[in-house]
Every structure is written in C-alpha cells, then in structure tokens.
Length: 192
Image 1 (cartoon, rainbow, N blue to C red):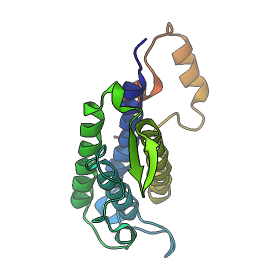
Image 2: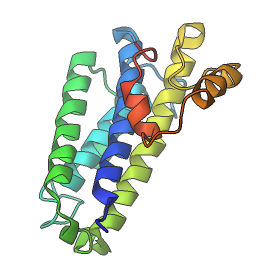
Image 3: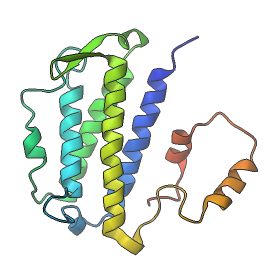
Image 4: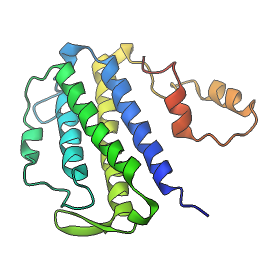
C-alpha cells in the first residue's frame, strides 16, 4: 500500500494557504498594518513571521538546519508599514518555496532526519510541526480579519446559522472521496 502522507500534507498546506489568502484578499490596503493594541500583531507582522519562518525552514530543507543564520526572527515582529503588494510578494515567494520542496520529496525522504535549532526530527515530524505552526498563525490572521472587517466580513467556512442548510445539501449527495481541503479549495462563494 503506497504512503499517501505527502499528497495529504500538501492538501493541508494548500488549505491553510487558501485561508490566509482569502483573508488577505478581503482586507483593504489601509488595514494591513492595523494593530488592536501595541502588544498585538498586525496582519503584516503575522505574515512577515510566517514567511520568514517558511523561508528559513524550507531553504535547503533536507541538508541544513531549519533555523538559518541569516534569519532575523525578532525583525519579523517589528511593526512597520508595508504595502499589500509587498506583503503578497513575500507570501507568494515563501509558499512557492514550500511547495517546491514538498513536490520534490519522495516517500523514502519521510524518515530522514532534519534539524531545527539543532534538534533532530524526521521529515514527517518537521512537516507536521510546520502545519501546526502555520495553522496557528493563519487562524490568528482569520480572527484579526474578522475584527478588522466587522460586519463586512464574509465567512470562510459555514457561516453562523448556516449549518443546517449546509448539512442538508451535503447529505443529499451520494458519499464521495473528495476531502474537506479539496472541497474548500474549489469553493468560489467564500472570501471573494
């Protein structure tokens, strides 16, 4: 039986990338750098951190420590005014690197050891670690987007009060193999 871990983890990364992009698409330029208070991160800060982490972790993924000497993690949390275009350029560059690495991994790579801050772990464990990390921060992005947009927010999933209608539509169809992340990525009615 072939290992389906790699296609599955790629779908999960695609799902969270899509959530982040749909959130960023909704926000107007002037809200990208908005902070709830001085201790909170702006959308631009969260994206700087995710992309800084991603570039560090996935550059030479199998051969060098994931915490690169050139990464300045503290700078990722420095509040600064960034344009939406610059932010999206960073976002796309980092995700392109991640998917390039994932698409070139082989099943036999999954048990290899990689290092993050000099701590060894299997490739599978490192990928799971990154899924969790990005899901955590993309969840922050979605929540922050909801705060910023308030009544103008458009739900990225089943909206409040919409569960019964959604379930009725789903259960009226025959069961199928498509998983949630594939279905989410195909939906055109959300976050646009």
